[in-house]
Image (cartoon, rainbow, N blue to C red; front, top):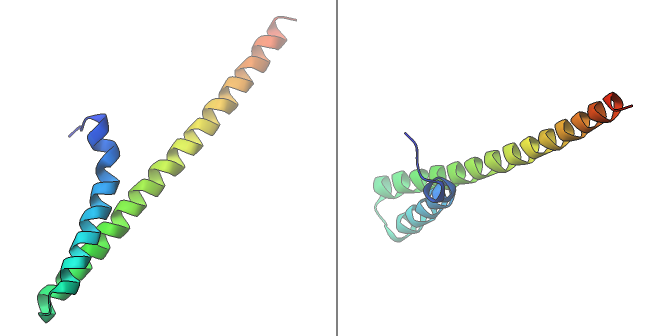
Length: 83
């Protein structure tokens, strides 16, 4: 399944926001089992959103670093061939 770019980019924030909302709702409820389940789901959403955001950031930084190294390596090869 493919999402449009704006939807794809906003998913980590949506997960984190849903997690925060579930944690807030679990705090407001005073029933034991439902409150704990909502708390666990909220923590899972918050951690999941943060993990996805960090993985994407790391991948993009690494990918940009590799591209800049390839471009510089390609420039060196072109410069040596022109000699």
